Image 1 (cartoon, protein in one colour):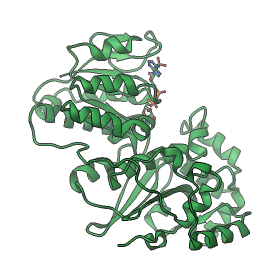
Image 2 (image 1 turned 60 degrees about the vertical axis):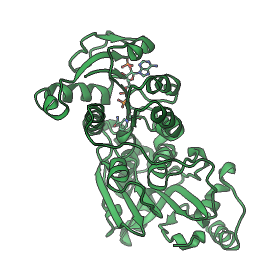
Image 3 (image 1 turned 30 degrees about the vertical axis):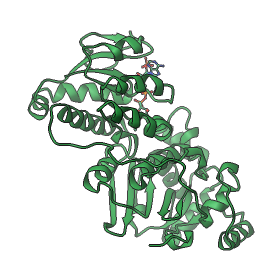
Length: 387
Ligand SMILES: NC(=O)c1ccc[n+]([C@@H]2O[C@H](COP(=O)([O-])OP(=O)(O)OC[C@H]3O[C@@H](n4cnc5c(N)ncnc54)[C@H](OP(=O)(O)O)[C@@H]3O)[C@@H](O)[C@H]2O)c1
């Protein structure tokens, strides 16, 4: 089986090393050798610390992905601009694997529709929660089950920064420490603003609820307004401050928020540190399930990518297997949740009709505007949703 890998950076290089290390096991798993044929990059002559693809590196993405000898395309470059090319790839019946949450959040449902019509699949496990098999669990372990609530801590950089703040550092000093430790991007804006978490929550809502929402419609606050003294105060009282993603789903529609929240230290979500991520899923049939693991880093993320490649290869060879088969509903109604309404006021696209209860909650929150933290409230009944 021959692959084109678009993007051989942190995750891509780790993937090429893992494929090389697993050369003996892979044919046993998929019935044939796995060969990386083309690597698409911006700088073909850069040293990458991994085995070189059999046909080397190129900047010509189109030629590399549409090469008729290529059986599967892996996209590890990031950004939304790959969507049209990947649609063409799946339209030709060639499966795609990606770790790109922006692509998954905005274009996942559409690319999947094209893939399904062409009899192939798009695999996106690594786009949320790094090495945690959360999307596969939703899709394969509970296919079609309805979840009412999900909560996630999905950004390791922010975890690290909040921990440093709990230990007494300012936000800027904590961020500098994260960058020095190689945990934060040179431009950490998407992490600190909550936008990275917002995209991951949109992908989780696709798989847990079967709905497509625009990421920017999710009311979102980052940690910019949180100060170290608040984090320390809550810590002394037995709580942790986490950047929490939450979503509710019921017959009436969906609600979702991303923002800094106070979580009991004794709860597993309160325990997470550094690159650890977790997702709590709650449904009437499944009860509560919590998946935890390493949410970022080249190696762990590449392991999820390779798992997707193996799954796609097995499906291609006729092994039983399903991916992303859940129908995704567009234009699902948003409903009022007090948190979502309150935060939506800062995000005009998220603002909807206020229920009396939401209005009341909004006024209460306004009254304590100097405290930009929210309690962890998971009660789906607040959205007026039948069980
Ligand atoms: N790193 C993580 O921990 C992590 C975790 C989960 C998901 N992800 C996702 O995985 C993807 C890759 O992340 P990464 O950390 O590996 O990124 P990275 O280290 O910045 O690597 C990006 C790679 O893509 C190539 N590239 C970027 N734009 C390109 C273009 N227009 N044409 C050709 N090649 C291009 C770069 O080429 P050059 O090397 O020549 O510049 C580089 O090889 C992203 O979608 C990211 O969100 C990453």
